[in-house]
Image (cartoon, rainbow over all chains, first blue to last red; front, side):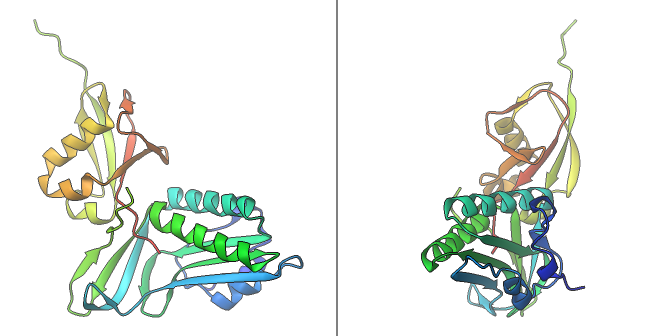
Length: 154
Length: 87
């Protein structure tokens, strides 16, 4: 089931979903981010690559502690909107099985000028990657799998 | 007659790599007062293989992170949160 992002963004912030079990429809997300005051929209799509640790990757499975991850992403997006004067911002992270070339996480930022949109986008993805309780389990073509967690930030 | 502290039960939830070493959710018997650090030690004692991951975990109660010196004195549900690897 595909989420209707175009009708989804104007929802009250409390109703936004930042964690999705469904594939992320990038054109639909960006279509919902246009704003008359925005001269710049930046989109980052974090995608599953076909290699990791010198091995061929078949797919990833993402797990999240949803109540906390949802709240943390919401807070990071709200912080970025205020800090960088954004007109719109969204970050959606997949959970479940995500195949090679599919989007695992998307961040879109819209601002009057490109500087803030670029900077805010980086700010959001770095915080979400390092702080949100979301974990990837990498599955390799040779049948093995490995949990991520090599971040040495903590 | 020896005095015995009343023990209590806490529910532990683990995620991601920790599920290799523990059940997703289980109940532990603890002393009537203990810190997060003590809980971490107890979990490592329970499964020493989990130590490398456990040493880098954070703990959360009611969906908020708590510090290692946070003291628990009533029955709680505690989430053990491994380092993030999203994105």
